[in-house]
Length: 174
Image (cartoon, rainbow, N blue to C red):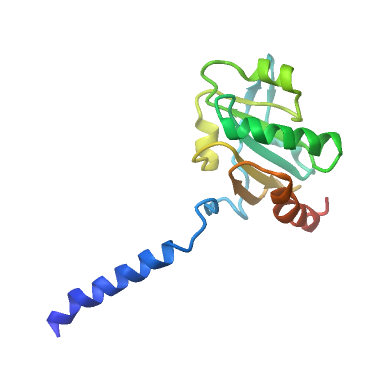
């Protein structure tokens, strides 16, 4: 019987690896789904005298979009976010400026437009870590009670918005 144990262990490992081949790397599960969004208070990009906290959004469904000026995908996504806001197709979007060491966010938003309700400045990256951010862009839908209801990894395009975000927002009464 002992001689079958290595073969059995090998078969189990092959099974795990085979399953992994069929997983979507963009679908990173979040331990925060169904839990309270992490609290924070950060200064706002372009106005260090103001700050933003998720407490301001209590009673509203909102979207937290983690982005960075150095992120190429974020710049592509920016146009989509601008169109959503201009056409009033999205709830308030808060743009967490993540690890902007070169301090480019204010200039980029002035040049390309600002789709965000607020742009808290997470220079240290701690708030992003608290949310489980692994890279930019990442986007979260947060309900009226401050509970994280959805996470999306990667840039949002019109198709993703329609197929993934719209049903969730409709479910939440938006």
